[in-house]
Amino acid sequence: MSMAHHLRHRVQFNLPWLGVLILIILAIGFLLPVLPNDFWWYLRLGKDIVSNGSIPIFDTYSSTAFGQPVSYPMWLSAVIMYGIYQLGDLTLMVLVRGLVVVSFYILLWIICIKQGLPGWLVTLLTLICALAGANNWAVRPQMFVYPLFGLTLLILNSAIDDSPINTSDQNKEYIKRFIWLIPIALIWANIHGSVILLFLLATPYFLFFQRNRIFFFILVLAFLATFINPRGPMLWWDTFQLIQASGNQFSQEWKAPVNSGWQMNLFFFWLLLFIPLAAFSKNKLKTHQWVWFLGIGWMALTGVRYVIWFLAILLIFSSFLLKGLLKNNSNSASFQNIKLNILLVVFLSVLPLSLLPGIRDKWWSAAPIVISKNTPVVAVNWINTNLDPDGLIFNDYLFGSYLIFAAPDHPVWIDSRFYPYSEAVWEDYLSISNAEPGWLDKLNEYHIEHLVLDNDSQKNLILALADNQQFCESYSDEQATIFSPCE
Image (cartoon, rainbow, N blue to C red):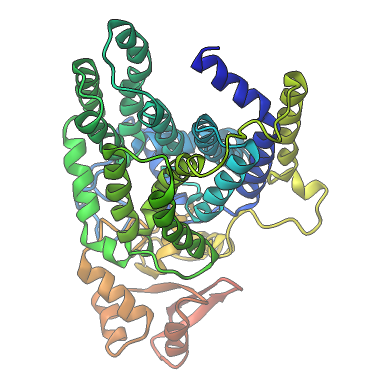
């Protein structure tokens, strides 16, 4: 039996375990609320691109960065998100989120099944990986590249159990596999700036394992494919500029993770367990795999946003190392009836559809909310009806994302894009929000007429404004309070 045939049978015999994984991940993905951070303003960007036929190069969404140059490497994601929203509103958007996320973990599951572990154990490890990284499942451009990252790992997975290419027959076989890196790079470069991850995986693979001219040629073509975007080669410069933007220091996802909360507990515990696992396993990682581990691991330990990528690496390598510790019982608890297995995985995959927004409300009286509580839907409706667009507003930064989309005539003071705003603007935002000494003078310097504040994160400012004679409360609900000039 060929290796490919053996792998296909291993997948088929363990489909019910895969179905359990799909059921749980889709259920979580459909129930998680839509966060405002990188969702609503991307819908506005997608709409502007479609309406104008071009990508904005100057900021028009804010008053503090108005007219300054901006770049949007994630332009295609914005267009896709806007198209999905127009076709099926939040129901379709949440469905797509679930599908792209689950496809990522299906790919990781397949890679781990290839290592020879029992299906139940692969499913358990993949589920832990998914749960630990669920904080990164927000509806945002990054979600679209999860499957691309998984495909890249699947393509390069020959690093674990194959040998370098030495024969012409191997060349033909591996060209069919590696050639997919080119369209992956092309799509990735237009969807999200994290395309560099592809080359962080492929370059060590070439340098330390697959020193083959054909693979090098494919790698060069993949790199050149990233130039096929509206900015051409400047995409790389734009990406590095975004990474180095001073405003990023004020974003939690750019900060180093801390061992707080059960998800980070899982992550750090797994990281600690990996040390003895690597030391005592009969299986040993190759040089390029250690480069992956150390490189992407360093990224994860310096920024929360990179943890989900490193968890995928941890999962694959842990499965490989565990195989070196366990007895050869890879077929235990597997299911031999392939037709029944297919029916089971289809049934388990369809079940979570009943949890989609718009469907669950018909049978679940206490169904979870679709839009997160820090999205000021009602307050923005009031703003569009009652506030003059000429009056400058000061707003909570998360509110800014929804304001950009739902109140396009009212430029925001700040929003969750982070990078367009200078360090001074972010420092003033924090100072004003915390009602630090001089907060009123700062508001007057910016000629602010209205304040759209979050009742939780900006409590100090709301209390300070209550004792102020310049601004009076004009609107309030459970989420937001709006202040305007006293008459």
